[in-house]
Length: 90
Image (cartoon, rainbow, N blue to C red; front, side):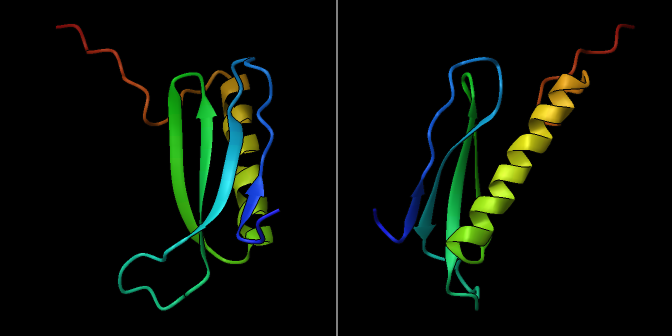
């Protein structure tokens, strides 16, 4: 296994957000922290790509908790903040 990434198994398509990968990446320009990872979370056709400073273990833990939080919000009837809103009828 590459020490710069963490393989993440996809779960069956059940409408849940799934953490797909966590990989070492270059830090954003001007960032003083050198250890930086990107993560990918998917649900159907939706993809969330994020980045975070920290160790592989720290970023994987964060992304796993973030994925669980997204799924909890969806179970409780919430919509992600990026979902389209219906227009107000006049």
